Length: 477
Ligand code: SAH
Ligand code: SF4
Ligand code: F3S
Image 1 (cartoon, protein in one colour):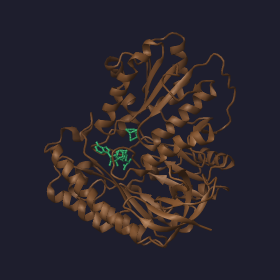
Image 2 (tube, protein in one colour; image 1 turned 90 degrees about the vertical axis):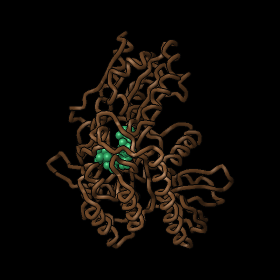
Image 3 (cartoon, protein in one colour; image 1 turned 90 degrees about the horizontal axis):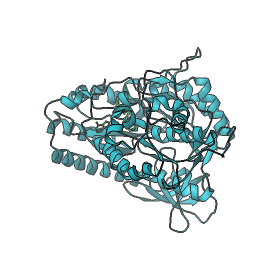
Image 4 (spheres, protein in one colour; image 1 turned 180 degrees about the vertical axis):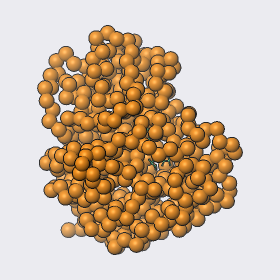
């Protein structure tokens, strides 16, 4: 699920608020894995800032883990750091512009002797050009090369002026001994890296390289470790998570992996994101039906309701085929919450194409929607497509789409008044005795409780109020 720019972006802001609040509450972020050979002497400090999707968030957790295990210390401000690392996103133009304006702010830091490094999708996409635009940067490393990061930093410390890690033709996934997770109850876990689809608007295949699945035994080992450390919710990640293909002789299908993860003792909730409609098969729905620990929520980005636009986007399915996947979920014995991503104003999108997207919203009745104005990206096939839509028109379509979705969500949430949900308590609001958390269907529920120490526990909440973006309620015992 994307984090940037969508209308109902509560997941992002909530988890951020929560992570920050949490560090304050617990004093330090959560570790998983055994920290071996930590020698603080002689090693520097690092400040790590992250933008982008959950995969980027999780990569940063792994990068931090690797550096901590080598004796570096993480600090909370760039001022306190000897190394500033910036993990970047380039999915839309605004996100990548932000990188260069932030790098501008770091300019004077390099003169103070600090190492400035750019990681992530902009690093991979721009490569050595970053050194020209921001000569104060000395490290540029894409996600497929993170395992080489300590080596690269050592080279800089030994006096090298500039280092890069830009290979994507690796079949390695970023396996780490140590991961410094931000959240002590919900653990992200990347099971498939890169992307082999070729959506005509998207930079991800260039910035994250080809698809590589992690071995199922390594995944299950990590899940067992997570459960031992007290994590109860696991979120499996991948740009096309359901395209997972186990590289081991065991040859687990994605749905089998879901069931195996849910079987691990101590795991109470299993989530997964993002699913690609073309690889979304019945087995996944059957897994959700048969195993209550697998959450009743599927994020299935559609991008457009018009088959003509889907073809131009190279999305590999038609409106009708997408709707068959929706019907598969609607026919399930458990009610499954469905969320999506939509791009408005793709080149050549006519008013009637856009109306097909609006009618798709009516038909599917999504539980949440992340919507974006089409943003032309370097090197992508859609960059040179004719019939660009003016920005103003994109804005109008985005607003119309979001208005419609707000109405749908309001109605859906009103229908939940009086129901009781299990909530994993994820944060405390500033208001006294007010908390928030997520239902299994990934709804944000704010609730009142006199209890203390609720963070990370599971409580029952009776819904008494509904807004378009969240529910409100009271804890019941
Ligand atoms: N792998 C996921 C999505 C990854 S990117 C999938 O296939 O669905 C997250 C979302 O950003 C996409 O679903 C899309 O809605 C949006 N996005 C990607 N490229 C974009 C672009 N060039 N302009 C606007 N939105 C874009
Ligand atoms: Fe991008 Fe398409 Fe891959 Fe998603 S499936 S990451 S939109 S190329
Ligand atoms: Fe952004 Fe890269 Fe994720 S472009 S959305 S950080 S895969």
